[in-house]
Length: 232
Image (cartoon, helix red, strand yellow):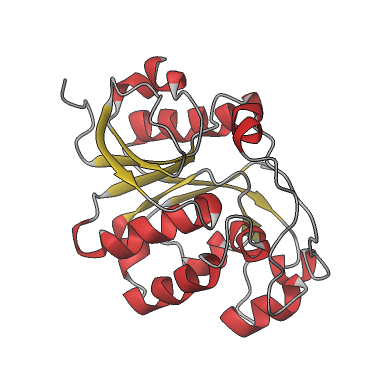
């Protein structure tokens, strides 16, 4: 079955999720590229176009950067990035907003939180020594909690290294956002390669949590994508 939206590619970072949510409306109106990092391929493939196996490193942040680097010269007009655990309600609500925005507005949506200062200031002292995934299916296969600590920490020091003092006041969580191709390729591919190298150090890197909070900075300035802040 062909997609109703051939100009959209939905990238899914999957570990041990069933992906049954892809059968629901409006998820079932799209086709999916699934990057599988788990030890099995027991997931619904009804609307899946491509399955590629990746090593289990860097969590979804690595997956998204890998996709950008590998498809840099052939990205679809709109790319949507989802973790496999979209069935969790807090994540599903955000995913639904993005897809409904694409359906009605024909534009990508960077669905985010707004801070009145900058994300560098907002998360200035943020750091993590331990973290475990929230999805029970994933946790049943991998319950690790120890993080590979970032070489540069806490967050404000890491941000300064990568982005200097570029002011950005929006961030997204849960690895759920979409972008127009132009907002990705306006940055040199080497930018993404360097971030990819930084996050592929282990299966549970602290840097991934910094990157998760920094997508707005990574793609700054976002011009061709609608920025929609949840606090509005």
